[in-house]
Every structure is written in C-alpha cells, then in structure tokens.
Image 1 (cartoon, helix red, strand yellow):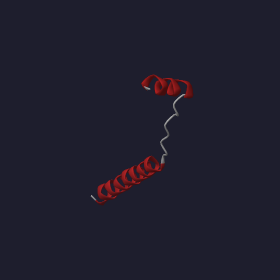
Image 2 (cartoon, rainbow, N blue to C red; image 1 turned 180 degrees about the horizontal axis):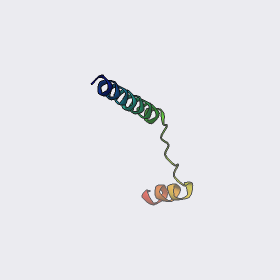
Image 3 (cartoon, rainbow, N blue to C red; image 1 turned 120 degrees about the vertical axis):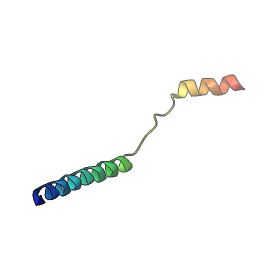
Image 4 (tube, rainbow, N blue to C red; image 1 turned 45 degrees about the vertical axis):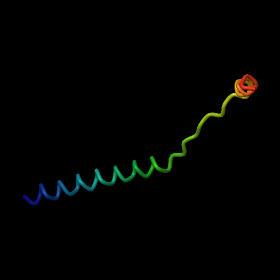
Length: 49
C-alpha cells in the first residue's frame, strides 16, 4: 500500500515539475511581429490621400 502512495507522489511531483517548467518557458518567450514591407506601406498611404 505504501508503495502505491509513494509512486503516486512521485508521478504527481514529476507532472507538477514539467508543468511549471513549460509554463515558465512559455512566459519567457518573446513574440515578435514581422515589419511591414516599405513599398506596400508607402503605396497604401499614398492611395488614401
């Protein structure tokens, strides 16, 4: 009986550790947006005027 409790605690600890590590990596990831090409951006501004 004690074997199963210890096994469950170890599995719980492993899942918790993996979850915390992946969440930490996700929050530290810096998202970037590609800049607009200058040629199209200039054409759109000129067409609106």
